[in-house]
Length: 154
Image (cartoon, rainbow, N blue to C red):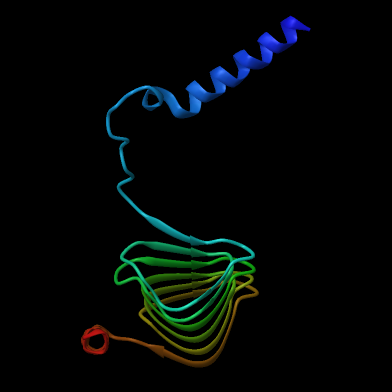
């Protein structure tokens, strides 16, 4: 019995040291990550607008607009967005109802977009679907869209 208790305690100690490492007993500052990813998890509903310069991953539901400036938006299978998405790259494997303005749009097998999309580069995999208005954007139009977005934010 004592052997069993000691073994369990050793496993807990080793596990703690392995995953927490040298920061467990140090007074130094914990290193922060260089990049930030916002994740809306499954079974989570968010109402409101999101603005970020980094990657956004959506497994849950969002009712609102998303603006990532030059970031990436990934709507995973089961994820749903009702609103406008402005981003550099959109990976769609879930559902988007509204408007999307991006440089690159990748629609995966389970991706569904209903509304209006403006893009420079588009890939739709077998099973992916876009219904609504689809606009290919040239460099000149993309610059005008960026100015319009900046004006809206002011």
